[in-house]
Length: 409
Ligand code: GLV
Ligand code: MN
Ligand code: MN
Image 1 (cartoon, helix red, strand yellow):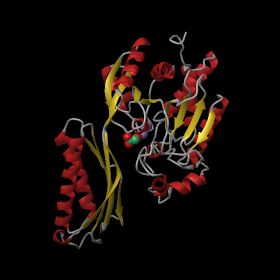
Image 2 (cartoon, rainbow, N blue to C red; image 1 turned 90 degrees about the vertical axis):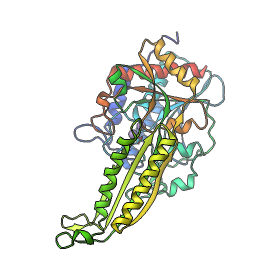
Image 3 (cartoon, rainbow, N blue to C red; image 1 turned 30 degrees about the vertical axis):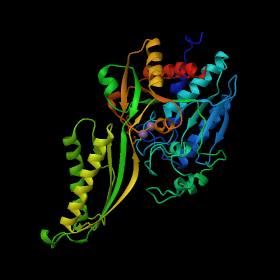
């Protein structure tokens, strides 16, 4: 009976579309930056759905949102979920799929009149993206006790706003405590956000680990001067130095090869005018690798390059670490469960690492954890064109259902 149970794919797609209306962008996709008014509206919609499904809703001091379904026995819940914040140019699926597939599983169990032995919990964690407030995975990091609540609340975003003020402004600061969660196991369904499943013709990824993440913000300070009259030998050009660093990051990742990736995704110049040498450049570097030693090597190479460049150009450099997470291996027995459930449902499945950061990597600190990936068309994500076919969404949610059923008995 339980093995034959299936989620309703159309209902899942309809909820994804409905949530995607909040913060919808022209041409598709969404902008629902963490703790924005769109985030507030998204949370309200998810809370309404949770209540309609009979879940008891709680919100913690970090704004993490939980919907609990009691089991036949009391005790730590089996948890699933993800996030509903997006980057500025986000799609409908990143994070949202994990939360809404959790709700779809709950509705499927409600319809079938099944009460699991252990309680089930669907979570939507605050600020997974880190696009507005660094670090990423902030809500789940605080939830598991990896960052003091006070430090998170004091964090300022790219717009200067404080996390604590924004939580209050959107009414998202709750009463539930953070720091010592009691969770039996955690499994998160997510789109792959890369090309591997599609290129391999495989439907389900059983995620074995998440690669290490290193985010640094650099600020170069030089001297602004006239672009026409200042001889090249007399320049202290912060803009040039930033762009030379961006080029170096690209070359570094290419030279190291393997899983190494490197990105300069944000850059602001000041005064940012056609005929003025920039006196200030602020930019971010995102380095990632599945191997922590190689990631450290990349970080050292970058640091050495920047030090030498600043000296040669006669400019000052400030560095600020925005995020630094080691690679995270998932629980092998949990990865086996995902693989076995996918196979039992007749899906092709492969084991793979995650290139993106996820709330699951934080939950892995406190309970057995793994993830289920489904294909991203064209490997495109953090882009309004992000898309996963309905059949694949349904396949992933059915694997989630079976994994949750297994864990909750
Ligand atoms: C979060 O989405 C990240 O991997 O940057
Ligand atoms: Mn995500
Ligand atoms: Mn994302």
